[in-house]
Length: 103
Image 1 (cartoon, rainbow, N blue to C red):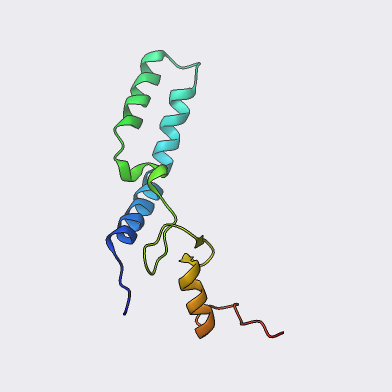
Image 2 (cartoon, rainbow, N blue to C red):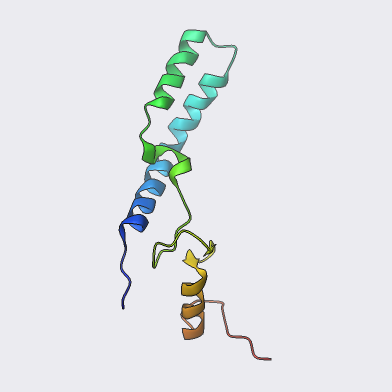
């Protein structure tokens, strides 16, 4: 059974792209909102702009998911795979730098 990109993986990819695109602007608004030397009206406007970001522009929406199956638990972040898919690919020799141990 071939695994394709399911909705969870696509949603996670979209969230990662949006967070990366809006990160500089988000950090600027945070810096202005927390700067107590600025007038309160300016800080308030910066906070309002932060609240207007979409849910995909917030870093808390980014989750580690398996890129093959979309599973959200047991992810090996270096390869982006869950434990089971990592095992399957390692046994087939499809992962660079991973070899089966010989005892």
